[in-house]
Length: 91
Image (cartoon, rainbow, N blue to C red; front, side, top):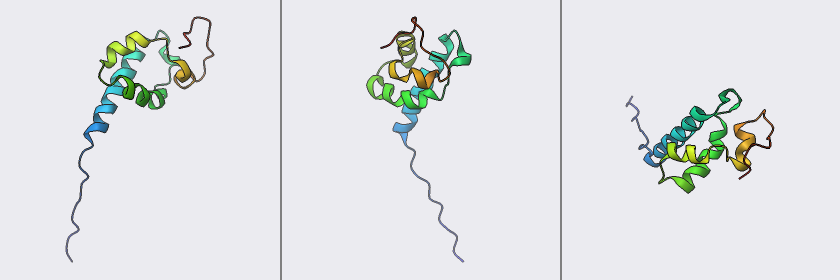
């Protein structure tokens, strides 16, 4: 019986690049979060691709510092158990 040929998909470099960028952004955000226990890193699964499409040519760590506190509509995904306070930026 002939052996089955092993096929491997070519690496998706664009996807790897996007995931690496999103991961750097998420970890930078978490590092500056004063209450990291309230942060759901899973929220970046939703917000990350949006950020990547818009800011992919920017440094994700610097961007996290610049945007910190301004998660806009994605606040509910990043902080699922937390209500917005008057100190939370809305943009």
